[in-house]
Length: 310
Image (cartoon, rainbow, N blue to C red):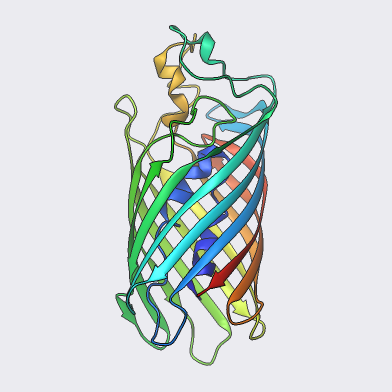
């Protein structure tokens, strides 16, 4: 499985700002490093993703706080500088809307905060975070490959983070992990497991470092068509709502609550890749959330994309 397919399986977790850290952690590293002599050494990809969120899963159960709809474009460039080392860079452009009874108003904070109201029922668009990564093909055999990776994500601008419509948490993060790929000899099946640990900038002394684990199993139906099923999980530190946020919820601590809640989840999905020709590739996937813990509840996520090798 090539680098584009690896990143796509990780990309699909990234919309809804609470999922945005995932696109900064595992995808920033190209999971399958390097290129053999004579092969394409780089590729550029564009992914469109739509995600619908309905409610929030708190310690007291699901809260009907409204819905968000997010449309995103992910731009990524990767290049194999040697047969083992690959570097990558990318950024998402996110357009998001919140509709519901619980908008976040920065003017209601004491004292009022210098941020625009974005939970006004309309769409708001902004670039999120730059992500930079490098991976190393440490070991490869007939059936197995192991590629450790490291990555760094940094906000592209001082975008708003207080609101259901926020495109991200406006925090830097750094991650380490590895992609472990397996393909049995003389088989059309393949599998990949990609665990990684993410260190995130602390807010008011609160630690939200976490694990991200992505696994997928696929089948090569033909030279051009492959299908897969995948699961993506996030497990880490952070605070609980409403337990750690007592009323009146109108101070600096509440203003930063979206940066401090733990946001754990498990998502599952299915996808398909189409190798159009030697340089162009297309893909389509669907995903839903099957476990939610202190996180906005994702109903559906649909991703479609294209990549070009060079």
